[in-house]
Every structure is written in C-alpha cells, then in structure tokens.
Length: 487
Ligand code: BES
Ligand code: MN
Ligand code: ZN
Image (tube, rainbow, N blue to C red):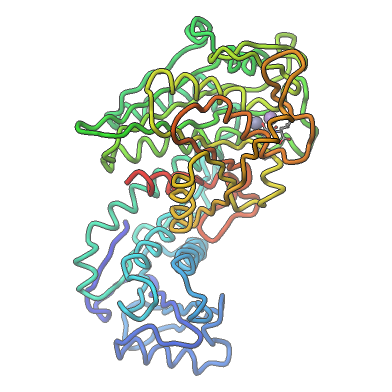
C-alpha cells in the first residue's frame, strides 16, 4: 500500500496526482512538471503559499483525472515536517473525497536544502500516518483509508531508498498501534485485558514476555505500585518484554506509565479533568509498541520494556492521602495525593528493572503532570536527564521525527519540596509550582543508573483537535522517537 516509484509520469494510474509547490522556487526539473505548475500558478488563486490549494481536472499530459497542487510556502522555511504534514493532511482530505489511490510527486534531488532521503522518509511517514482512522466503535464506516499511496521520485533515489517504504510502514504501524491503544475507551483496556493484549502481540514478534500478576507483585513487595491499584476492581499487572539479540553490548530499559484510567483516586479529579484520562497509559502504549516494532526491525542492543499497568480508582479499599507505603526499593513514601499516582507505579518498575537487568540506560515515558502541559503546551514533551549526552540524543531524535522534546532541569535544591516529615519521601510536593520538575525529581531518587531520562508526554500523547497526520485521540508520541534512538 506504500510505494516509492519512478515510472514515467504519463504512465501513472491514480485518482489524483499531488504536487507540492513552493512559493518562491521551482523544486522540479522535469519539463512536464514545470509546465503543469505554470498552468496552476497562472491562476490567481494559487501562488504556492502555505496551505494554498488548487485542483486541475482532466489535464492532457497525465492519466489521472485530477492534479492537486499544494502550497509549501517560502523555500527558506521548508523542512521535512512541511512535507510530512502536507502529505498527511492531503491524505486525510483524499479519504474524505472517497479516493483510493494517490500519487505524490517528490521534489527533485538537490533542489532542497535537505537530503532527498529525509524528504522521502517524511513524505512516506505523512502518507502512512495520515491514512489512519480510528472507527472501531462506529457501526457505519464513513471513511475508508486509501488503498494505495505512492511517492514518485527519479530512478536514482528510488533505487537507493527501495527499502524505505517497508521500514517506514513498520514504524508507522507501531505508532498506529500505540494510538489505537490510547484511543481505546477505559472499559475496554482494564489492566488484565491491556496486559494480555500486549503480551499476545509481543509473543507473535518473538519477544520474550512475562506478565507478573498481582499475587506475585505482592510477594515482590511492589507496594507503591499496589497502593495505586488498591481502589480498583481490576488487578495490577507488570509486563516485561525482552528484545535480546545475540552479541548485544548495551542494555537499555524502557519504562512506560500504564494507568488505564486515572480518576485521581480518593483525590478525585473534577469534571473536565476526567474525560480524557483513558490516555494515562500512553507511556505504556509507546513502550509496548516500540518493543514490537524494534523486534520486527532488529535493533542491535538489548532492550527491555517494563510496563506497570494499573487503574487508579476511589473505593473503600483505595489508598488514602496520608498513607505511607514501603516501595520496592525499600524507601518509604508518604502519599500526599492519590492523584500523583504515576510516579508511584514508575518507581517500583524502575527499581525492579535496575535490580534485575543492571542496565546502563533507563528511559521512562509517562503522562506524568498537568504542570508539564502548562509549561510546554500540547505538542512538546519535557525531557529530564541526569546525562547530557542522553538528553541531547533524545532532543535531536525528536527534531528528526518532529516529536519535539524540550529539556527541563533537575535542580538539587528543589528536592527540599518532596521531603516528608514522616517517611523517606513524599509523592506530593509542598509547592504546586514547578510540578513537572518535582515529579521528575521524585523519580530521580529511584533511578540509580549511569544514564536516566524521563520524558513527560502529558501534552503530546493526545490530540483534542487532530493534526495534519493524526486524527483526534492518541498520537503514538514516542514510538518514532524511541525507534530512532534504538536503530
Ligand atoms: N495523569 C495525570 C497527569 C496528566 C494531566 C496527564 C493532564 C495528561 C493530562 C497525573 O497522574 C496527575 O494527576 N498529576 C497531577 C499531580 C499532582 C496531584 C501533584 C497533576 O498534574 O495535577
Ligand atoms: Mn493522577
Ligand atoms: Zn496519571
């Protein structure tokens, strides 16, 4: 369904040909293409400015009935993301028009300030991700994904990058898997079900999988994690997935927050804050989908996915504000607020993973704090790290995949804020200010490894309005990022 082709443009059969056009520079050298663009630009309504669009019908030079011209804007502002979103939004529009087979023409090699491979990659990603629809709960399927999307380039790059569509498709399928899990309603992904779905898919991909049930978690004394699950009718689960290729030198642990629904517990969230809390397992979804994807792609390092899964609910058995629990690592935690549950499940998962696997690197992904959304908005993740190199690697990977990450500090003196009068540490900081930082500092107390990074994805894990290449709901944020750093 995703192709990179270089056959003669006059031979192409499709519902439409799509041509990205720049405002102030010609991106093509083929005569036929240049003259087509001239026809479009002769029209008053099309200049190639950002989001300009015009459609020419029944053009003599090509077989498809429509040629769609899409504006990219000014040459100096064009980035790979311009192509990812142009292609993604065009695919979404073509789906609505009922098309099934579309061809995108890529600019000529050397016409842009970016390597053609990067542009082709972005176009293929936009195509694949924009073609995703979440309509599992609709009886009538109004929109049907495109059956065939092709990207046209000249023969040289088409040969050089012939394996690209396959790889991009695998990574995008991982992203879509994570999106679908996040968008799934909370009654259909309670911990027992979510964990067995992960295990089922992972085992198909030759990953070694272990699902630790609540009785065993009790024996292991994962009391911080169990404290969160206490109020729910559902049991807690810890899913562990291993990708262990022979000859691997490094061990990397990925941890993902898996709260299938975060009601806040006894510190019940108010209306307005509850409705989207099915997304509180987006870290878990990203880690599970990444593990499945790197197993398909064959990453060279040993990678362990550790996924604590619970539901945070109020009830007569629920943990109370004021309770003190002894974490897996042995430190006691005073529970100041049952809505600061993510950090409780994460510390037990992180401590367990460090003890068992002795990794050099631990990276956790979590929809951890509303404060991070306040600081960085809905589209940018907060990165905290004890290691500058790891932080830089994550930030550059995020620039490449356009899963933007911004580093926030771990100031030593802020540790004051999570001191407890009674226990070793408190899950609620004594100030509401800097909430993303104090949450990260809490995790840092348990992340005794050479390299640790925490990515707060509370903002970008979910999109209220939809984006050029993501429908409303889960975004799959983190999957492409993690695949990028593990490749
Ligand atoms: N899951 C939430 C954080 C969240 C908020 C995710 C908005 C996505 C969107 C987390 O468990 C939480 O409730 N955090 C509290 C912490 C507070 C009680 C210290 C918060 O951010 O308000
Ligand atoms: Mn919470
Ligand atoms: Zn939460």
